[in-house]
Amino acid sequence: MKERIYSPIVELRQYALHPGKRDELIDLFDREFVETQEAVGIQVIGQFYNLDDSNQFVWLRGFNDMPAREQSLNAFYSGPIWRAHRDAANATMIDSDNVLLLRLAHPTSGFSLNGHRPPLGSRAKQAGFVAATIYYFNRPAEADFIHYFENTMYPILMETDAQLLAYFVTEDSPNTFPRLPVREGEHVFVWFAGFQDQEAYEHHLAQLAQSTLWSQEVSKFLKRRLIRKPEVLRLSPTPRSRLTGRP
Image 1 (spheres, one colour):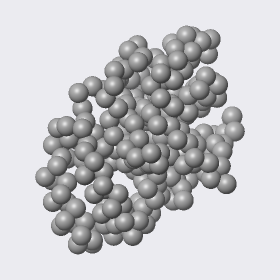
Image 2 (tube, helix red, strand yellow):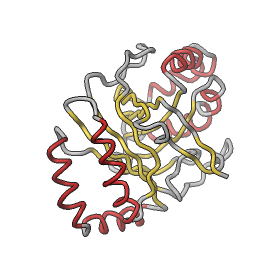
Image 3 (spheres, one colour):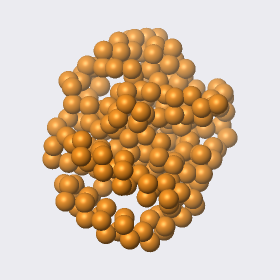
Image 4 (cartoon, helix red, strand yellow):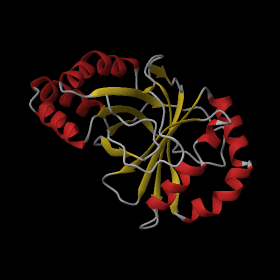
């Protein structure tokens, strides 16, 4: 059964870690920081290995709105679990401030997740692959861009065997929990696509390269709108990530 995780507000968090510390942080996170965050109203959407950076941990968490974010983060970071494990977690990290604060681009553009995450103690590698694509603008993503994505780009992605998981724009209201910084003054549109595995993703890219509509019209449209090259995160789920990218 499919269960919608609305999460109108989402944080895309990318942590730079000390060399060789990623597995240590993931073990700690999957054991101590999933259910305990959800107990205070945080939606832990997914945790990932960045396949292009062995010293980066990427994860997503969601909130019902900005006031709920402030309340839930206050509850978690002043609570006993974080106090007990924060030194161990922080010791793995070089930087944890690479955070995009996002909101739904459309009322129905949030994540919809299948089933439940693996239980506490699970260590088996999960199948699945997620590609997160970040588009950068010099102003907030406008309605015409979102319309173009939904009506022109989305059908091509589906035809080339990508499963669109969710899409968001920058949440530009003040950070309600300044103790944890977020990237400010940036305007992004972020979309997430899921695949059975990395091979399926590579097959999708090959099909996309053969699409005349994508390589000509879409590429030209993006070149006119974006202020820099799109950023793509190639993500593999951790043993307890609820979001895996699998159909």
